[in-house]
Length: 218
Image 1 (cartoon, helix red, strand yellow):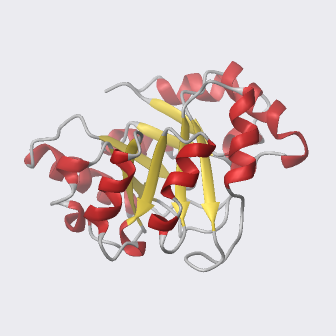
Image 2 (tube, one colour):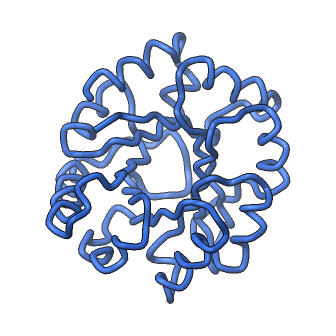
């Protein structure tokens, strides 16, 4: 499968966010990953619709918006209006996951579902027909620059096996957390094809070289 790289702006310099996004686009990024945190579902607060709306003006790359928030169904339309192309919600944050996914699809954008590190992949078995992407968290969500949790490599493989078994072998599997020049090898080898990298890319001397490296395993 084609490997796609989605730089996470959580690690960008927000005083020059537009330039940071343009830099990643020039380096070969396929998507821009936007982490939205509410201080309730995760112990941090990041950004919201106004920032996304402004950032939308500086690039045509798809916005990969990851909602780490409670009650995401209240905000779907607003995030779509701000410029989101993919909206990913957490299985753990949605009492009625199918309903929320249908809201996202009805709004005209792609739908993803994220799993925290210790949530079993089988919880997504019955939602696979309705989604475009699965996001596997490889750190505990809430903060950037964390270290990859090694056991998640096995979880990625289990997720790919589940997708194949259920008839969705080409499902995009995204991995978020601690993906860098070393860990991407295990992540891709286990079956992921969308790599979120924040700290590794925004601190890299040559982000283009790193993105090229990450794509080299396809």
